[in-house]
Length: 237
Image (cartoon, rainbow, N blue to C red; front, side, top):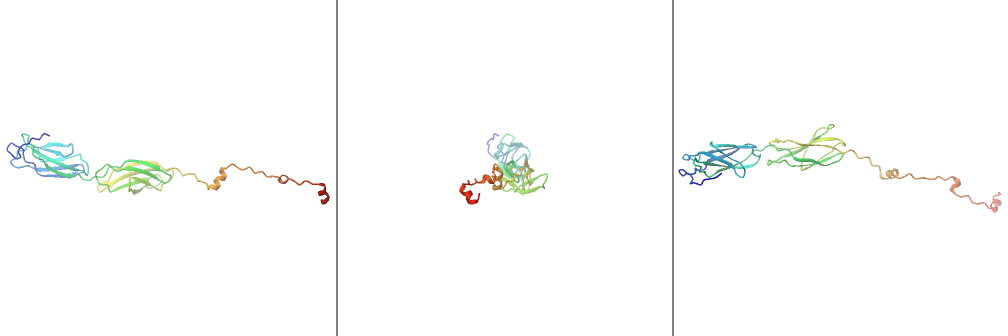
């Protein structure tokens, strides 16, 4: 907006700035701005309202304005200038306010990091909000189990103990004093139980090829001694 610089309050010049400016938060996405007339002698055609550091500006011929479509828990600085019929513009009256708190949006980028037959590890990013988050809760259930809920203390979450080879529906949500936000959800099936592992000694016996043991007859076990004529005479043979 082009501002014409004229002496403040001078006849035919720029009016004084608006008086008693109030910036009042109404909801998490709106604020109302109220102000009084600069002075009884000022001829004001309309008012120019704007937000500092924001691409928001407008004009009005009444002494209030409602800003909508704002971000929850954000501080906004509002300016109001009085404009004469000749286009002379006053100095701004400034005020600021923080929009009301709202329940946080859903956590972002929820995905499974790893899983076993009895546990699932997940990770997620914090909700995209300027508002405080008091609690993040994770719940899970399967067709065979009741719903369970715990409070998460970090962005890496592990749920256990779980049943092997079972599909779980997992949800995660953030909350604050304004309420519980929408959930992020994911489905994961746990791994099957591992095959039982035999003790090392027994397993080694069954895993090796069978040994071929040769059973010898008594005649084969040791050669018979040869008999000599002297032996036969001695034994009476």
